[in-house]
Length: 112
Image (cartoon, rainbow, N blue to C red; front, side, top):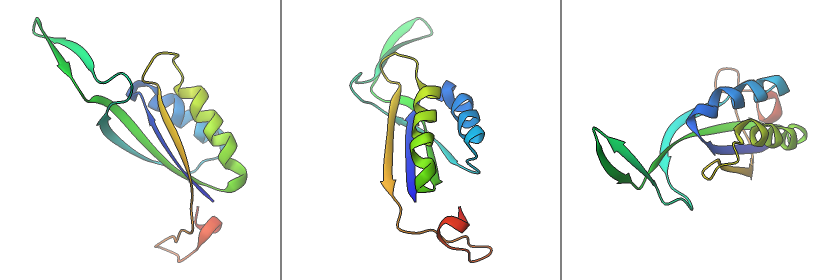
């Protein structure tokens, strides 16, 4: 099993969710986050005054999938979140040792 964490631009969330749902991914966790990468923040104009923010708003998506679905899920996220501009985000793929569904006690892939 794999645990996929993707940090993307907020306006790409619906496209990524639709792409993962199309693959059969049954659930995900979404968190609004802030951070920066190579772009080191951004310059914005608010009420006529220009200011620099060093944290850019992003969305973090967390998905647990079976090993055979992981590659397709990563590809789907990459294609759906891609804009070609700096700050498109990152995808992290981690090995997952186990999972337990609290309600039923099911474990590992049956709990996904």
